[in-house]
Length: 82
Image 1 (cartoon, helix red, strand yellow):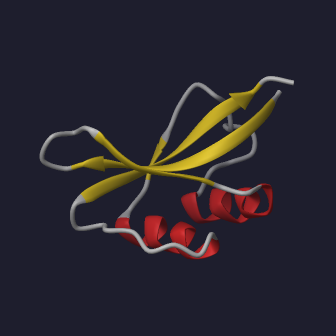
Image 2 (cartoon, helix red, strand yellow):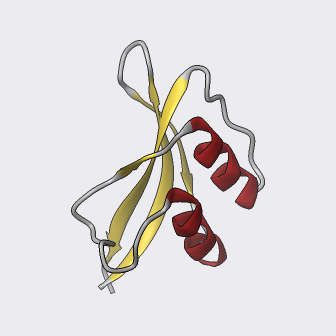
């Protein structure tokens, strides 16, 4: 099974989904390392809550700026249908 990953922000006040940034394939492995995701535990069954510093580091991998004061960020896997 192949996964794509998205850096997703959720508004701290409303808990609504906010910004979404799909990771390019080259950024997935480094992002997973930053998030501390073990290869064995990797599945489409969960999302990983990120500390603000982890979210900023992953955002830096894909060349974007994020607002960690307004949003809580998660790294979310999505199954790719082939």
